[in-house]
Length: 93
Image (cartoon, rainbow, N blue to C red; front, side, top):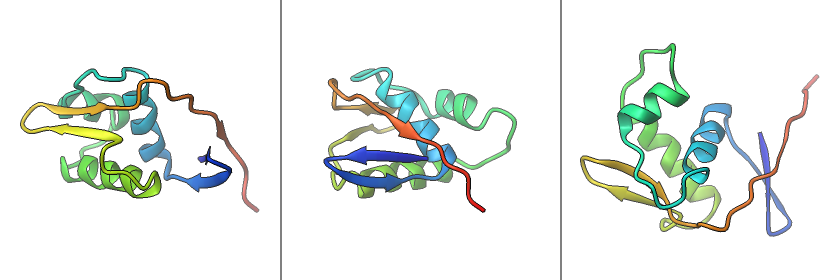
């Protein structure tokens, strides 16, 4: 999935993009790790580490550690309330 940010294109892995959308749809709301796993990886057995990796990928691509707030033992929250996410999906040959 591709996101355009300030004229630059950011490419995210599909599940990382799904996590981004989940958080951005509820700005300021703390979403638990259990909710994230259930929403983004519903039919998979994955460790919580995969959430941490995806969160770090988003922070790195947006060049901001503040874009997603961590609430220890609670979850994560999107901290940019006026965010519009437009994606492009493309096929590779």
